[in-house]
Length: 506
Image (cartoon, rainbow, N blue to C red; front, side, top):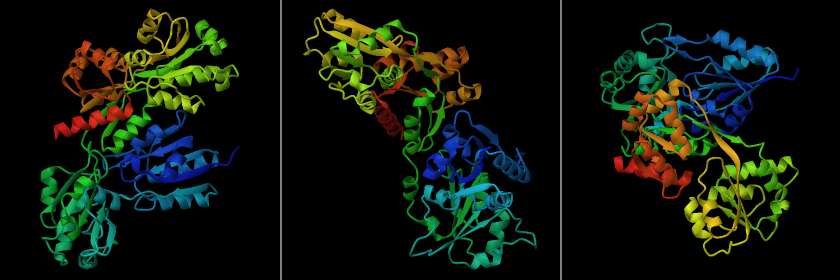
């Protein structure tokens, strides 16, 4: 049996992009992942597809697993030889009971590696535009837990002493006892009119903040309906430049965006949207599947050097063609140096370069019409052309070249297969602010999985962002209103279109 190891990983304050590089790497190789509710669910897409996921979260009204049970399970899994990722919100050693888990593992002889994370004590105020230190008014900060009851005689926090500390005071897990904490601090001499703030779901798209004074904060929090998880900040730093709050959040903060792309391809769009502040719902409605049994593909590969022009209409087509070549012991050396290689866009050209093939021609627009326009000055009569495409793709390029006398082999190298997301994901998507479509198949497959009532909600609900005119036409034909369309028909272009739409709505 191989030796097990447990990684105690600080997941950060909530924004999935704030996990460290080392934490991400450890999570991606774990075969068992223990996670809780404080933002760690958003990192589940990084886990191995075959990883065992165990919810050990605790909330005031729900305990999936007690702390003793969690610690015992970590020891058991480590002794069984598993690679375990224990995801903990914030930093494992900041009020997360990570030290207790680490001690138990070490005492049991299980290898343990602590991966530090960004604590919400710093991350949440930063995201709300509150600097925890400021040279002119706060040369330090103090972090305490509010989980103790301030009315108890035996509590460890000395609120009388904390009231007199001139630094910023940060209280984690104190929302349930906020009135008592505020009363105790004021009674001990902390000014009732000192600026104060409560920050709920800090660094995430759900972030909400209330800025008031120490004396008025409890009532303001109640009026605004803020709850856990949240942190409290007391000190003059709360009153700094209000515009700093915008610096801590992206332009898509507060927006929920649906990604319908295939899960294997969704990471670049998802990460880009999250970096801009959006809450992303992954609802993959398609899956890319290779076409392995194809006489046309076999014949094309057997004579690939005999073609004069090679046309690739997507990065998927490139990757699948390369995979089929590898299966046959072939690589880029099977091509002729004088063959004209055409890529429909930069992403396709990049995919070709990754396989050692340089694209000679990349049209300015990433649609079939642009490929024909780009080849307008190229003699094609009597020349052999291979088009590597998706099954059911438009025959536009092939028909256009045949009309000019070319000998065209139009070969499907992959297909998009419908996927069915979980019902709760579909329901959440229908309540989102925006839904993105990256191909006609994502539109048609989304509509296929919806019933009549859900289709009506989609038509009247999330705004639609399309990657290009073909996708937009499919959406409009289905009765959807396209709110924005990418000028450049790729993922960066789609994100720019989403940003412009959000700016128009502000």
